[in-house]
Image (cartoon, rainbow, N blue to C red; front, side, top):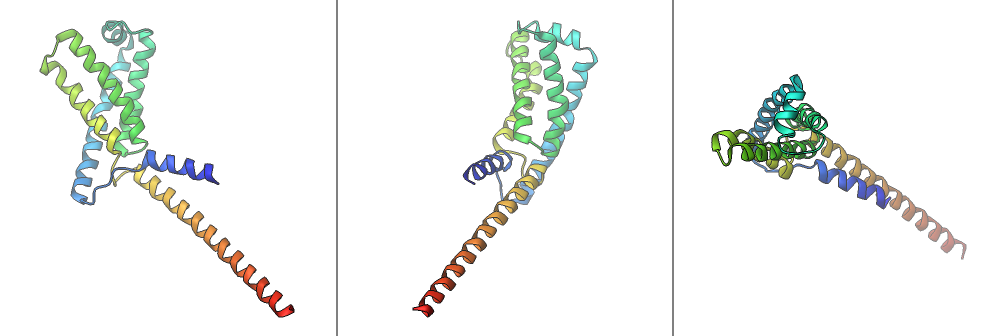
Length: 184
């Protein structure tokens, strides 16, 4: 049972958003998540439209191995991870993948143009947003919050059943004690 509890607490920790009681901030949090997730999808589509060109211009330029493979990894991270962030499902994992992709993009921009803010700004803003979601999770209005609530309900249900079994066992032992006293 302790391994199940440990697994459940790890799942809850991965899904549970940092919660603020301010509903207004949670609404804005969900809007930010949706906008950033939806806007990021087109980056993955752009990469897939001409993967060889992207691999040569960006990945091979940095000297990374397997440029075609890494280009597909980046494209599918953006195509799969961005909608997951938008709806708030597996948000920390998806946001971490997108944050990593944006860190590589920032490195590429710096290596090409130095610390040119106009060239660097979009990938830096995306990276900051995704880092926010890695740290804080999806917020209250998300699929992750629904999963966490479901996990909490199942844990509470399991604890309630365990308490009922203990009460039944206690009542049984009380009845046995009463019967033994009556015999003596």
